[in-house]
Length: 126
Image (cartoon, rainbow, N blue to C red; front, side):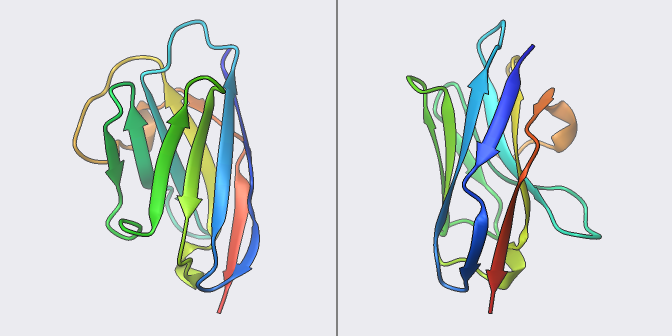
């Protein structure tokens, strides 16, 4: 059974940076798509960025130019480098994975992902 474990969350001031990590383990089949989502209190889960096994990346408009998604296949680790953080980036960030292909030019909806991490909290103060 596949498992995802996030780390790297924390509290920073606006303009600061954080890097989130997500380690994948125990997957029977190769992961085809991985993504980062976030959810703030009282709001729906929002897709932030995704990467597929061809290396294609998509970003939400709200983070494009500030966040970078990357995948290290040797370490089975997904990263999210977050720069110029804003208070509105405050949320719990989740890693997600899918072991079947889903190739689109936007961040896929949460419903297509089969595996989820437990989340890591990011708090940005003004």
